[in-house]
Image 1 (cartoon, one colour):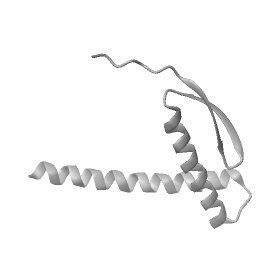
Image 2 (cartoon, one colour):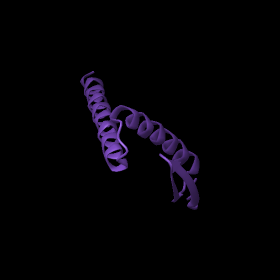
Image 3 (cartoon, helix red, strand yellow):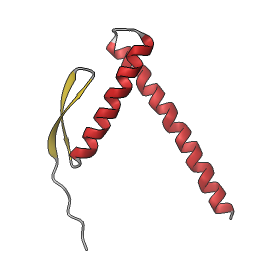
Image 4 (tube, helix red, strand yellow):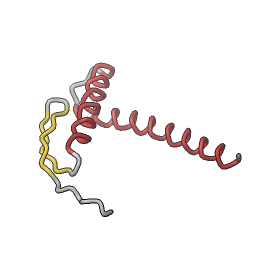
Length: 85
């Protein structure tokens, strides 16, 4: 059975007061990612108490990449443990 390729759809999302029009083949996923990104950016803006949007965005990305890297390490360790069995 072949999987039908979804047609890209235009989606409007908002993050930290900015509106973006993007195309995606998975609108619901993009909306979820935007909501979580917006939450994290707002959380970071409270921590740094800065109005510099670029600084807030950069710090948010660094925090998310740190979390991603930790998840990747945890995953790799789990895979290694499973391969040893």
